[in-house]
Image 1 (cartoon, one colour):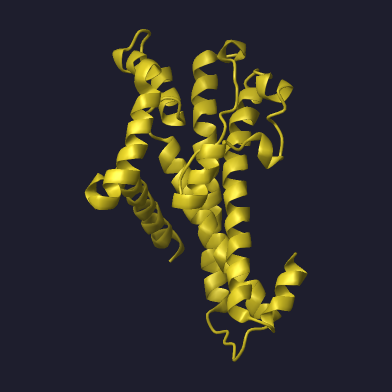
Image 2 (cartoon, rainbow, N blue to C red):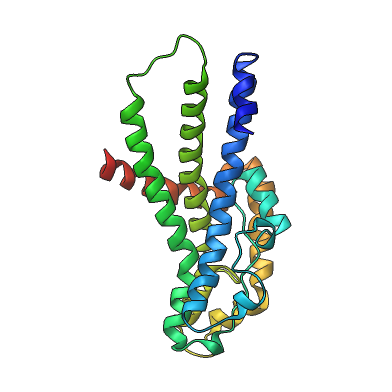
Length: 239
């Protein structure tokens, strides 16, 4: 595949860059989504629950983790979700510890990948800042691909992290809040009954009214806010 892209450079540099961008987009997205879900299953497994393993979800096969609508939204608007990893908390050696670790596993993975990608991008930028090209060549093609991949990796992983931290059923943020609350908590009970409708309303408002009145694009504004804070932190750390 990469050799094919390189062959395009001499023919049409703009088209080659577009293909490279699409390839980097897909790779960064797959890593972010699959890694997120694998982290849930793996941590649940380490805490004594074998459900994900028995159901084949401890797999690197992206198809096993993709939710059609969630993946489509990631492609179209830049945020979405994957198919939840099945767990059975009754199998945890320590229920509270297992639930907390499992619920935060995915967002922790996304943060770490974003952090590492930001570090690599800072190194990459300093290492290539003095390079100049009179015309596109194989090295230019490779460097563009790496730049695309690292920047998209930061964006997608921070997006998934921010979205999944929302305390709305059935997202990770809700699972974390549920674990820390007492039984029969009113908010938890409400979310179990109406969380799906809350999520649907949030999506509809953001995608419809939010396109007319930007302030009503709640999801995008929230995710951008989280991204700005963390990328600002990365900039301070990596210079």
